[in-house]
Image (cartoon, rainbow, N blue to C red; front, side, top):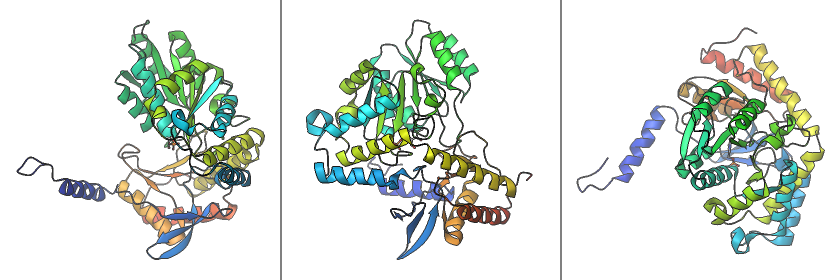
Length: 411
Ligand code: PLP
């Protein structure tokens, strides 16, 4: 769109683009929440000039570690000891003792030689993949079709050759590897648990293919770290496969309940990315208090299985409730429970009604986060939801499913 002078009328453009997504029912409205320490998954929600209590059913703080006394105490102590910010990039005065300790903790979690911290999981994927893709001569990255935007953007930014293989399909990956030049360096990039569908990758089969074709493996364990494996090292730990993965990437912001991202790999690979990646070099380091909180969270979840056990029980209870009332949900062996509504307007209507009439917060997931026609409510039970929270959720969904005349599965 342009005006007579050839300049873009950005105001008009923005207004029109926003009107379009509103008509399509995929305009995003954020819920303004106030989480109260010790009261999760309940929170206060700001609506106009009122506050209302809601139950959160869509948080990625899966284990409630964002409220854990050890994490909060570590953050308080670090804040009092070190002050607020890191004071610069890691190169220029931002590396503190706390950062070094956390990297050691992460390397140990994944049984790797080293780890490298980033400001978020998004940045770690973007920075590591763009660095590898742009520096390794003639490299091709084979990327699962369901990969997260942070991986896609990192690969795109690297300008290296990219091949997309069918989601979680080792047969298709195998065919695509056969078609590559055997001498060409290859990276297979995939996730262990896919966030929007909750399904789990066949990691062992992918590693077999990688070894057969001399490819390196890059595994995003963002939704799995803290959650799976005897020490919370993720699905690769649970399946005894960590040593077969070249780079494991994770977040400190979901099950660990704080913020930040990382990669864990060999000394050389971490040092290479530390030295060449702009997404690591040119940005202020994480605040020491955040780093100390994440360290406490990882340390706790390495030793304690209680949170994982409680969480698993709650996920099973939610699934049973949905089966009982016939609400279709995607089956997976993970912890994410997606209810696919397949209609952006109905999806938003259900989400709004849950909030307005039942005090339940579940954000609708629409395009471009998921493909059009697969709009969904993504339920993430936590270990701290109660039996009565689950009953209330079931009653609310049951009512709204009938109101929207959506089909059911046989109970
Ligand atoms: N990778 C996956 C698969 C994700 O789902 C997300 C975020 O939701 C990220 C990476 C980014 O992690 P972070 O939220 O720490 O930036």
